[in-house]
Image 1 (tube, rainbow, N blue to C red):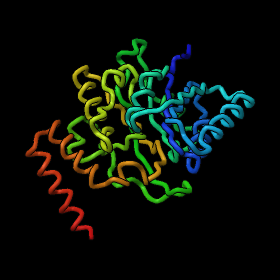
Image 2: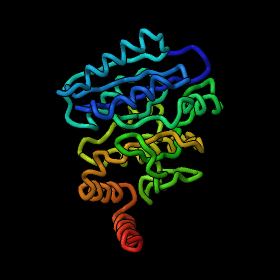
Image 3: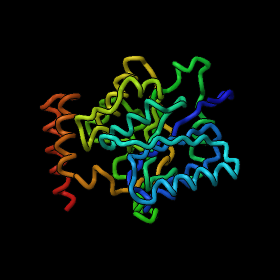
Image 4: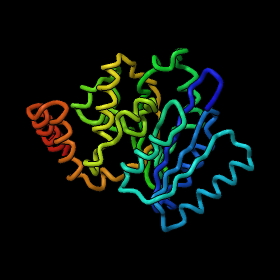
Length: 266
């Protein structure tokens, strides 16, 4: 996609009837100072004004000669994670990250600061499997609520996620070639991102690839998403995912600790 030494990144935005929160996400991508961006919007045939907003976004950025590529997929899907798989399979860049309606990059230089401060190998297969960082939570108006409670570990491994999803999905950037080998498991409706991140990190360990800590806040994340609005079902799915990767004993012990911790904090 680009000829300079810095990698390209696909920012994937999955939408469905998202007109209320989409504008700040579009604006956030458009104002990124890093040039090697493909903005891939995957819409599940929205019935509100989402597509009108997207078309205005494309026209505005074309007129302003924004160097970012903007691609659109509009077709029915089987849900959020099916749409995210479509994004992975259609992404044209070296890395992919997900920034859905209501989410935004922490500042206009977020991607520039990341990609210009990593040592890149001439052989792309040696570059980091994952680039990760911190996340802030925002409300429906995009106002800061708090830093995310779960903080990223200095040295992330797939075993780190036994303690929960320590890195927010939106602040977890994955090499696209690896993502295509580990698509989201559609058997999970609410926590497929948790399972996906673990499998990506396992894959990276097998290939001895780096998980790169940016030590930066990457994303302002809209706190009320699919997982938070279906909390109990999400927790049950996470228990099964945890058991699959870490064993039932470890999974049950960790969930008992989650319950105890919640009680203590009351």
